[in-house]
Image 1 (tube, helix red, strand yellow):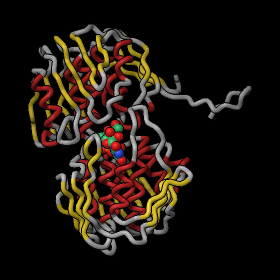
Image 2 (cartoon, rainbow, N blue to C red):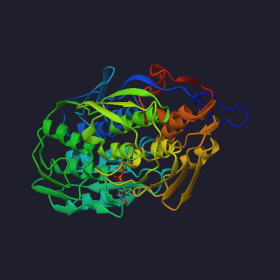
Image 3 (spheres, rainbow, N blue to C red):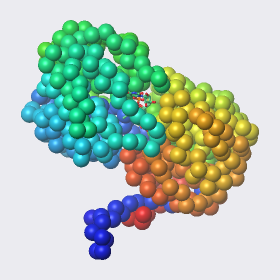
Image 4 (cartoon, helix red, strand yellow):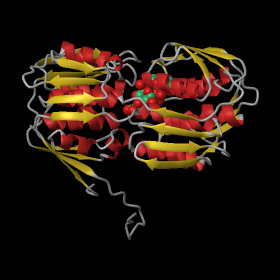
Length: 437
Ligand code: EPZ
C-alpha cells in the first residue's frame, strides 16, 4: 500500500468505472448467490465443530471480509473453487475485534452463534453507516429475552449466555422487523434449551434460506419465511452442505437496468415469487416483462414509455429498501412525477444529489424522493456513496448520453459479483479503470 512520503499517510488506490451510455442492453445475465443470505450463513457455521460447505456463494468483498472474520476467530476456512467455501469451526474464540467488525456491519451476526456455542460473546459494536441510523437495540432485546446477560463495554457487546434458554418474544421495532436481528436470535435459539417463539420475525427469503441451512445442520425450526418463528433448541448441531439462493436484489437491479436502457434481457435467477413487489412497480410503470420459468424473467423494453409510480419501501414482502435507489434512477426516465418513499432508512438518499449531477430532476421531501421525468440524463463524474446508490448510478449511466465516470466503486464490489463483466456481456460500453481513484 503506497504511502505519502511527507505525512506517512496510507494512500488507498481504488478502481472506478467508465460507462458510455445510450447502448441498449441485450442478452442473458446470470444472477449470483445472495449476499444477504450467505453473510449470516458464514456466522452459522460457528454453531458446530463439523465441516460446513456453502455453495453458490458470490464473489464479493463482503464475503471475503466475513470469511476473514470467521478465520480470525479460529475456524478453518477454504475456498477450493469459485463459489464454494468450506468452513470448520473446531476451536474458536468468543471475541470479534473492532478491527474486523468495523469493516462490515453484518458481522453483528456473530453474537447469536458465539453465544449459543461458547455461552459467551464479545463482539465490537458496528460503526456508523451512510444510509442512516442502524441501532442494534433489537438484537440486544432478543438476546436478553433468551435470558442472556448483555452489557455494552469498551465499545463491545458483551454477552454471558450461560443461562440462555428458549423464550417467547416480540422482535419488532419502529421500522418493523429486523433481518439480521432475527438471524441472530434464531442462531442463538437453535442451541438454547427449550422453545423460542419470535413474533414479528423478518420474513425475508434470505432468512428462510438461513433456516433451511440450520435445519440441514439438525436444527428444529417451524415457520421459516413467516412472521412467527418457532425454534426448539437441540443439544448440538452437525455440518451441512448448502447452496445459497439467488440474489433477488441483484435480479431486480438487472431488470431496472434493462428497462432504463430500453434493452432486451433474460435475467436467470430472477424468481417471481421473491420479486412480486418490484414486478408490481414494473407493471404500474407499464414496462412489460415475461416470466420465462420459476427462476428467469425476460424483459423487452425496446418500445417502453415508462409511466411514473408512487412507491414505499417496507419489510418483506413489501418493496425492498435495497431496490429503492435503483427505482429512483429508473423513474428519471418516466413521463411524469414519481414519489418514492423510504420507510426503512428514511435518510437513504445519497444517490439523489449524484443523479441530479447527471441532469435528473429529483428532490427530497423528508423520507421521499420526488422525481420529475422524463429527463435527458448526461454523462458526468459521480461519486458512489454506498452499495445500492452505486447501482443506481450505473443504471442512470446506461440511460445517459455520453460518458459517466463512477468513482469509489469498491461500494459496488461489496454486493455485485463482476457487474462490469456481466454488463459487457450484455453489450454495455463499460470499462473498469484499475487504481484510478
Ligand atoms: C439487512 O440489514 C440487510 N443487510 C440490508 O441490506 C437491508 O437494507 C436491511 O436488512 C433491510 O432490508 C444484510 O442482510 C447483511 P434491519 P439489517 O435490522 O439487518 C431498524 C444491502 O444493501 N433497527 O432489518 O441491518 C434499522 O435501523 C444492505 O445489501 C432498529 O431500530 O437491517 C432499520 O431502520 C444495506 N433496531 C430497520 O430496523 C435494531 O436493533 C431494518 O433494519 C435493528 C434494526
